Image 1 (cartoon, rainbow, N blue to C red):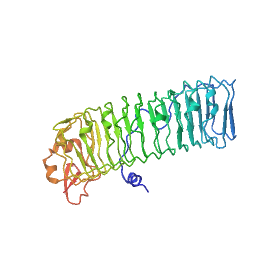
Image 2: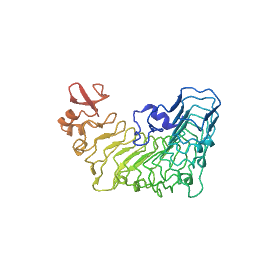
Image 3: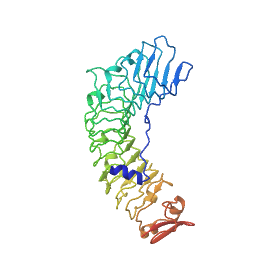
Image 4: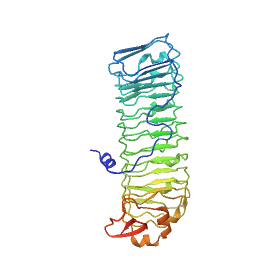
Length: 386
């Protein structure tokens, strides 16, 4: 069993949630009487005729379906098929020129040919989650697709070709979770992408040096095999959220946050032994910092200036003290999570009692069962120390 998968079963750390894209297409088209929907379809073929008045076709379960024929139809704007036997996107999809959303999930598609989509000038959402895709055929040079959201989760993709992605100039969301990706293009140009999600893959390194993504705000790389932080990620200065949890990172430089707009940073469930800064005063807009389930014995916060920080999670480390944490972060209230560390009784005694009582830090899972020392923070509530 993969070490990270085993670890995730045994910890309470949670990856950050998508802000823009979600895990699949959520395009909502106003429901009308002009929709064909069936919960179960048991034929091997399905036809959308040219004289049909339906705008939407939804087949929720079509296990025998192998062929879809679409006659020229300018009314259809959504096609949604699940649990089918299709092995490719229907070639006749080009006969629905006003299609906004194409969803083919949990079928048997193995190869995605983007050329089949060229004649769909209004296509915005393409969701091919839970298929068997191993390859994507690129478009001729200069051809661009208008897709805004592309979902290819739970497929078998090992390599992502930059020439494929360069044809997607209008892409805002790219979601490639749960594939087998071992490398990602270092020279990638997606001029309007806001969110990139490559969770649950096999990436050991990630080089962002030549990425041209000026509007990137959310990057999710959790549950990979990264042993070092993505190279030059901080050059995407608009970055708001970065999730590197459930990897194999050994160290992190807080200096990398400087001059970014990063607000959420998740480094939980790695192998971190050091989180450092070389700056004399690191003032950043960070609001949430998750360091739970690492190997930290020391965390020097004396140079940190984080006036907006309202959550600091150091659960399950090997820390003995945390400096002036109770006073340093003015926005902090009850979200300093201190559980399961080797806190020094001497350090806790230097903390003003009112801070411990008012904020109730570290009380969960300690109570009166401390093996050695303990410090009361309120009636019948204690924090363990040594």
